[in-house]
Length: 377
Picture 1 (tube, rainbow, N blue to C red):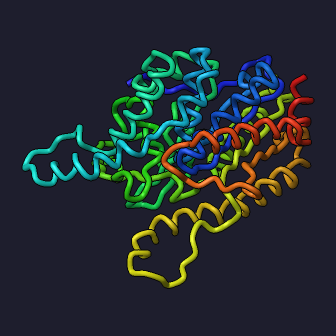
Picture 2 (cartoon, helix red, strand yellow):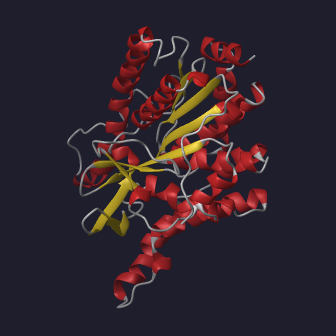
Picture 3 (cartoon, one colour):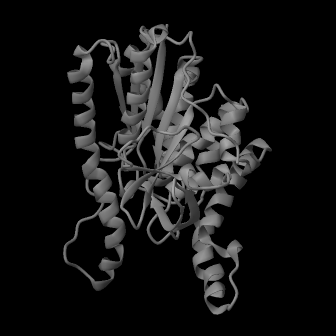
């Protein structure tokens, strides 16, 4: 397995950005990747200032695709790659592949519906770019492109209700509150598999099975755990982003050459403040939607308090100018749902795509963007 990267910030850096991007299916993927493209075009070189990103569910796909396109200098293809129908292939696996699997006495890994989702991402990418980067090694990608942002992909452990982080960089976590995949996994995985371990939607995909051995001081620990959508634990990505912020802040505090470094956080939100469904106590069939409704409404209700806590975090800690630079800034961009509904559909329709792109462009006229622009000019 390729060695993981270490925490490192360029000596010349004066501003670095950490991105937290909210989950939300294809909508999150399209909004995250498109927003980054818009910023890069408005402020050339912006992405070179991004140190790390914490992503969840659909935003894990969106950021991964953008990161790979940026590495290949092909970000103009981002809308075409992320607008595709990635759900139908997985649905096909439910009704055909897995039905065959159920009747067969032998196991066929190729019939796993999660593989269909991974291959749909990879096929869309290769159709637009002619390359197969999403099939390549996750760790090797970050070792090959050392100047690109480090990605922290969030998932959830079923058996422990614990946050999972998939990343080439290890978070310092003395209390073991975070399950770090590469502490257990003895081999690397394809980029598309790392993406899908974060985007395991209810009914659409099965949980991912982790069967591994962890070496300890006294014995080898056998583990059999299941990984599901990162949104079950925390859908904003902010919690992991603040962990990253603390790591860089500690680096700044302990190394004088980084004393003038400013560390900024950008939160990319795609959810609405509205509930996705109302339970009127209706038909019996309505209960089939309850697992999905519960997950979606949990996403909706947790974004506002996480946003408030993060604002408070940046306000309160500015007094400690040794560890916390008083020039650190928290930025927030949100997909407006006031006049248009953006459902979690299986693909991005033409009309929806145009409206979302228009909202990306509208961000360039906000005070939030002007603050960001002034920092880097």
